[in-house]
Length: 501
Image (cartoon, rainbow, N blue to C red):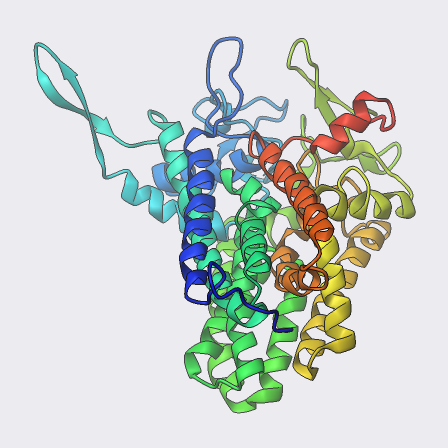
């Protein structure tokens, strides 16, 4: 990218790693602190829910079922919709709408793909071996049991979330810092970009809860990074191809649309080194895919994931079953006064069927807008345009990849509902359009070029700083509970501009 003048004092190249380490430490510390204080709501009985929403509870229920009972079944549901005694989902704070019921056995399973919970269940099995102690004047210190979900849910949830989100976030920031050496020589641009990566996107806001979107985004970057080295520097070490293949495949099984990125990275590497791509990229890419298929088979008896078994959603009390009268999702919300589930609530976000143009607007510029909630990416648009018009051929190819993937994914979520392949519900009650989160690392790559465009102008830096404040505010607004509407959606709802929440 362009080589801006370097201040021989504070902006000396030797100071860059030192500044990076401070920004990374601050960003990682803040996110870790948010994870350690994260918890769901407290009921009128003062029971603190250890998880934020039905979404993460669904995954944690699988982790607990595997660790405690050695099964993927999270409970059993009677024909009248009640739970069989002893079911995990029958316990306070563990129920979830993200479940399916196998008709022939009445066993309930999470509707989430089982690979990620399976991996984290092994961590839980290790944590279960940790003894817990209590102190009394009569007995002194004595063992009270082990670390288990039924006794220590908050501690276990936070440890597992930190493992799944915080560790890869830290690795991502370190690698992204190294990538910045080739993206900019301007100290302000470098500091701004790394700060944005550390706390100015929804990857930090969503890191407080267990989900597939942040993990998929980090894995996508871990695949993209070695491919960029091979593409730009003509590097051909076998491990680069193996790492790219493994993480591209893992990202795709965690977030299916990332398959488009995986295919593009395969083509890029095959163009450079066909033999090494076939010998290193492909075998390691098969590992996550095989694990994904195996864990699906353990749940459904086929390669089809649980959410693909449409008949398993049809049972009494199911949130996601189709209303035969209109062919739409039943949808529901909770009564604010009683907490009771209200089925077929027309005001719920899952019951909205807006025209595609309205949905597209809110996806990009409206209440869930990629560019309104995190407006720093306006500079990424500038960076992509400059890379295409002024950049080297290699950077033109990368820019084309990012733009092409973005257009493809936006088009998919805009048009796919017409064919019953997705829903126009903005990801449900959640901060931001979560299905675009895996693209965030790719957009961050072009942020420095867009900032360098006018970095010498004080007014430009002021505007950029204001947009960073808005982006960071959106991210940390999400950290109170990512599974709630973003601040802009709530504001528009309160003013009456949006009739659903």
